[in-house]
Figure: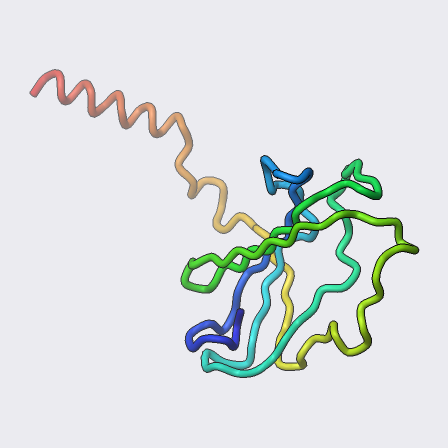
Length: 145
């Protein structure tokens, strides 16, 4: 997490869920990917907590079902850390309350949305026709030489 080690000013977080006692896949997205930032590349104290994380879209789970929550942190240099928690779902009225003060976010952390966009004009991208013509030209040249 940013702040725990020198050189980690930011990280990307993924929160996923796998269904059942032995999940086959962890591809059920609970939250969109987000970026967490800190004040510097040097170690600093802090904590963050996610409250009210929803079930994945179109999840058909009920009280008593088992699942696994997976949190992935991808550091700026590409290293990944994984943490998983096995859970059993309960009805909302049967859930344990989180003690006051347990779930809090440090003011030293920032959060950013992550999205993609296309850069440059469409004409700057190589299309398949260009690739095929290049390969054909290389084959023809190779045949005659």
